[in-house]
Length: 223
Image (cartoon, rainbow, N blue to C red):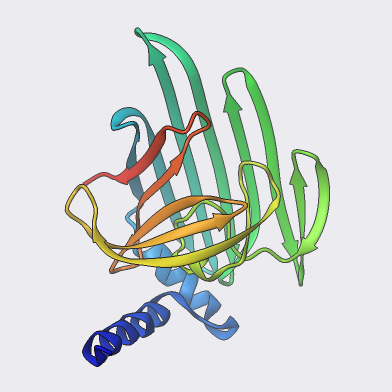
């Protein structure tokens, strides 16, 4: 057994836990720290099979005990310069005292528009799914990825379907992504299958997943 490698691996895991894990007492500090890793506006380029198809924007504003996170995505796929697919996404998260309080989300896929949402109180979340309203145990994070503590979650609010999605997140390891940023790679499985990367400050820098046709879709932070 290579004890030097084992000790290095243990130290890496402990470091990741210290960055991304916090108990309820530190929830407000954790959310504030996560929001503080970003500028007022953070932008990402969306590619399909390596070709640019759209943009993703993350806006975070903070005042007193409230954090407001606005997320938008705009995608257009063309064939011979003719639009064949469009996707427009807008979501807003409101966090109060370090906890996810409300979420509204609208998706327009081609000509079809759908709205979902979340409103939490105490230990419960009331969610408006595509299949109708439900009440579930409180959901602490969404599928928007900006908060690195989401990698510790086993259930997230899916802002596309409105459902409580069950997930398992594995640490793949440290990598250098295409624009030269060193980041930690995480892999989601379960109701959500995707890969997500965070830099040393906990900033979300990349996302990849398979599109409906199996093509590789990637969101990469702009510099």
